[in-house]
Image 1 (cartoon, rainbow, N blue to C red):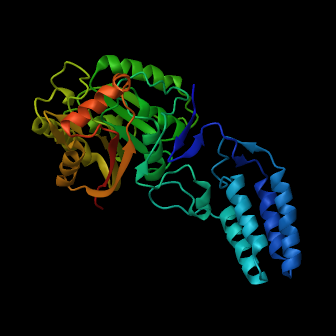
Image 2: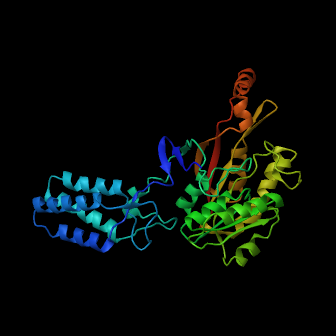
Image 3: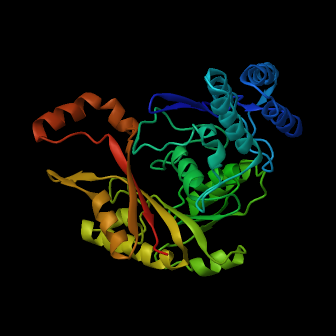
Length: 370
């Protein structure tokens, strides 16, 4: 099992021991004592003493209780270094007061749980529009058994950015259950609909294999998302509306998932595929809260000597329904095993045909107006 990967060249690991295990009351008391010092020399002496205590503290990979902002050693040491580098008493005291606010106050936006007082703690959250991820997260119940599923890092990142704990995420193209596994990990309630009954049975098993420490609702059901009664599904789970939709539709007919004619991968043409995708949007968007987000993961295709920009076509379908575009993320695309075995052949075909071999997909971030 591999639970370490890189994002844009930076190592990310599920098992990193990053969070300081400290007594929050004692830490705040020490900060208060530092602020009482009458000159810069005494102030810095107290800061050095605090640094020594923190450097000897133990660490844990689990985020501490939510009633106290989590502390990571590296950004905290950077703040202490800034205090010690200050030339004047006023500037050093200002940095200490800023640290005090970060320890005693929680400031979040309406979108997520990121504590803006300690924004440097969230270095695992990607804010660039280009994602280069070297491998899928294979930890826990993420087995990667389903051909065509998206990597767990995508729902993980989008939930961190666009939801708070205990909010509701819905996936109308559930597939192998990746979204709901991440819901359990991050403390988001999750509902998913998948057309293929056999796939949904396997997905349920994997979702149940994942621990549920936040005691959230995760339900996976079989159905056609173009006509499925999402309203009843949401209400039966105890909710009134959806806070985030995550959609990873088929990239038209690149992979045929089932023989079912209701499957978007069996659409007879690009126009029919877009019509069917639009029907999913029409059936789901009314339940999305105003001001909340939809994430659509989609790639393009190549057919009969022509590049078919499915990503931009799907974007048009979404904006036609009143959604506004917030961001487009371009993510590197891991080739299928078949393409990896035929890498030289695909390069030859590209040279002959004048096209480029697909190496990316899109993550479209759209927002419903207030």
